[in-house]
Length: 474
Image 1 (cartoon, helix red, strand yellow):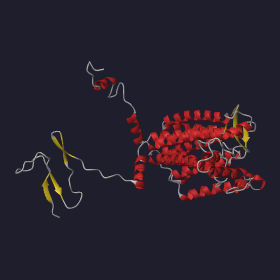
Image 2 (spheres, helix red, strand yellow):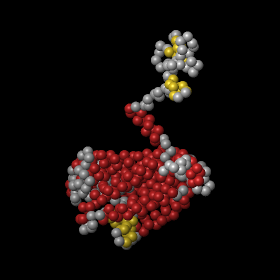
Image 3 (cartoon, helix red, strand yellow):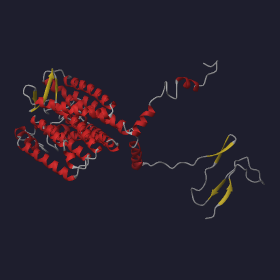
Image 4 (cartoon, helix red, strand yellow):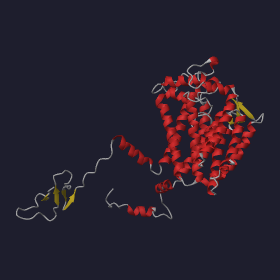
């Protein structure tokens, strides 16, 4: 290809018969597009070349994906996602508890805000626990593991003593603290197993003992079975399922081989089948999966009316507070089946929003567990993420008719202070672990002001940078 060279000049600076001005550049003019250099323009007494236009960024779905991926890779993304998603779930849960519990409270001759006020107090205490857990270093959390486990086991033993433990809906797993306050120790057993199991596995990994199957199983599995036995003495199989999921999550994070998983799962499945077949109530709940009619004796009444509530909500729901099923049709509208009332009042948009918040929270927890180099942080973050996601799946699956009704609340969303307090403390753990990532710690340190003694900047130096106004200027 033959190219021609022509002198680029500024009008008014070239005289016929002379050469091109010295400041004028040479532009390469070719037959193919894109070879021309950007033109020069005069700004004052200098010639400056206009920068070439940048290529447009990616557009459409691919460009949106790239921008989302870059935003997700930022150091503080997991920290903000965990904090924001958990707070949104809690606030929306308070709103739905107030809406779903009004009729139930009036049926019991109580104030229509009775359940909401109790949940609000629990949320306030849980927020304090969340802030405390998010500011405490990992070493102190490890120090709390053994006292929490011993205290939880002691309370779970007290539940089985007649006169101290009380039964609710056929399950004896409550201790009354006086007045309207009661405590369910099995909810704190989930947090105790996570902290104690994470500390145990981390110490064994430091000593390189996890390559031996006996060190991986003992004493983690026997202690977990102790907690499961105490829970099943009270008849609470739903909590036992969540505790089993936490145990499997810890073993998976520890790198347990497949044959070990198969063995433990076989034992757990055999025990579960035995417990289900020996209980008519559990068998009836298992038979209600996918039911569309209440059935003989209204055995599937709760499962079917949960589906009715979701179906009547439509795309955007009947409006906040306008539920029909909470008027005595749907049992437990503010606890186990609050997701059904959410679907009826806020529609598909509301339920999908709740699902998206739980998905974001779970994915952020996985990121925290996957990016850390501290084994305790990895096991604890993975255990908390397994707990919250498994419990959300069991609750929502039961409301949708895909799983048997297990009687477990929706984390951070359903009514119940005993479930809310340890869950919010666990969220504080995730926030603390997300803050301790090296990149996140550096980003947070850069955002803090450095003023005062010992810093490189003071108020006097800042005052020097301010240009003084003339004496006559106002």
